Image (cartoon, rainbow, N blue to C red; front, side):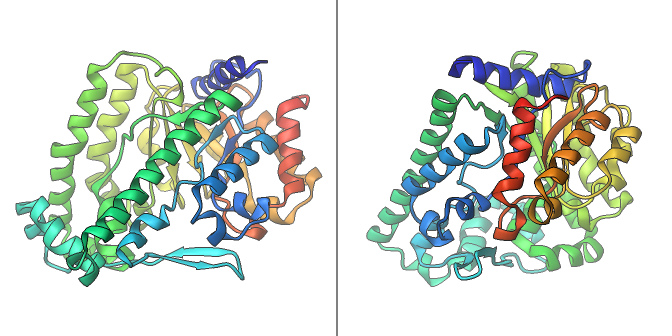
Length: 389
């Protein structure tokens, strides 16, 4: 195949998998590799994450080596230099042990939801940004602002280059279009209140959380859905999935809370996918099984959920209308043998993807040295590309 043929073929096999119209020509292989690609290339985290030219080389070489059909992350998940332009990072990098951590900032104090709802822009600029950067933001000189803008442009330029080169040189399409099915709880947890604050607010002020979620639904989520509704039906040219979604905050709620905070955003998203004949890939961290029965009436051919925790074989039996991504345990990638990895791949293709419905991938985001070995990943990639199913 030439590059254009490879590009089109990769989109086709992803569509075949999510549409579930019969035995696939070949199972698509999705990369959920994050910073492990840096380790695999033999560099330190601090070397690659402060040098976009080096990250570009690492990311392109990674795809050349393993031949993934779709890629979740292109080395751009942690734009460290942008936030450090103000002199205050949220990341901790340990090159000796090869790990990176993000600090759990708490930017919104308890009881401030009303202030946010009354004037979002004012609250963000006078409270959230001030708490995030403190004196560094207040004392930002023209030189500091120039540096931040310069780093932002460098990041945007990198994104433009890496996606273009992936498509034009290696035949890898962009994975998905805009986000759908989101919930404001995700922003509250990740950006404002942190894990602890979020857990407390779910019990101390559920009405305010409900108000925030509904405000975002009316002012941001539904208008975005309407933009998609006004567009053409069917597959979006040049991408493997039309839309994306997912969450981590669902791990903190029970079924009643899920129905209260999540479902008002998710149900319109599912209806939109069916109405517009579109597809969506959702990366759901943690265990999503307690809520999958909400999707049991969704027609097949629209939704792919990445399984991080849970028995993917049992999930296939219970929910034949949903495509699943994942399946390869990271414990096996890092501690198993190439033969074990290939045997698991064969079983997944036969039992989960026999009639479509499988995007082969790692069950979790691979980030650290012991998460995977090159030999195991090469064995899986070789079988996916050339093995007999």
